[in-house]
Every structure is written in structure tokens, then in C-alpha cells.
Length: 162
Image (spheres, rainbow, N blue to C red):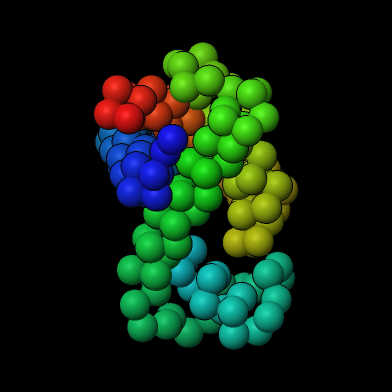
């Protein structure tokens, strides 16, 4: 049985792996990393206006601590993904903690940024309102693939400690 501590640990390490990958790809290939300040601004604006979509984030006065809030939100969302993976593994029997299942989970999970977060942040579905939507989509696909694999391998490793 996975404990809350183990789920949080797997989540933190998986999100950290995703972040390291994103920074590495940024340095080597120029793919822009996620701007967590803008995510924090979006979250705070959404909470304050009770509206998820339609914000012009660049025109909104910055909030105090919006970068930190964006990063914390990012890691909290990671916990949700690990819980989802665990449910699909332990309760549904759809996944196992293997490289391939992790990769599949990561690839499937990219629908969330493509169809929710990108539109919510004003970039449009699959980043269609950006100058380089393919770059944004490929970047999201890459980091979510790494994230899914990290979740699976860390869950597999955690089984040795149960």
C-alpha cells in the first residue's frame, strides 16, 4: 500500500525530474520553459475573478509572490497526477509501474496542458494563438513523457520499501 508520504515523495521527485528535463532542453535546444510566474498570476486572477478563461495576463498587475504560487501550484498538480496514476494502477488495473506504462501515461496526460492550461493561459488550444504552437506542444509532450516515466519508475522503486 502506498502511503501519503510515498505519494508526495514520488510526486516531488517526478515533478523535479520534469523540471530538470525542461531546463536541460531549454539550454540545449532553446525550447522555452514554463513561466511559473504567469501560472501564479493566472491562478490568482482565476480565484479573484471566479473565471478560468479569458484573462489577458500580460495586462494584469502582477501579484505579490505570484512566481512562488505558480511553483507551488505546479507541485500540487503533480500530486494529483501521481494519485491518478496510482488509482489507474491499484484500483483499475490499467497501468503498472513500468517504463512503457509511464510513457503512455505521460503522453496521454499532455491533453491537460494542450486542452486546458494553454487555453486558460490565453495561448489557445494546443497553443494555436502563439507564434510557434508546434514548439509549445512538443515541449509539453516531452516534459509530460519524462514526468510519466519518472512517476512509474519511482512507484516501482517505492514497492521495494513496502
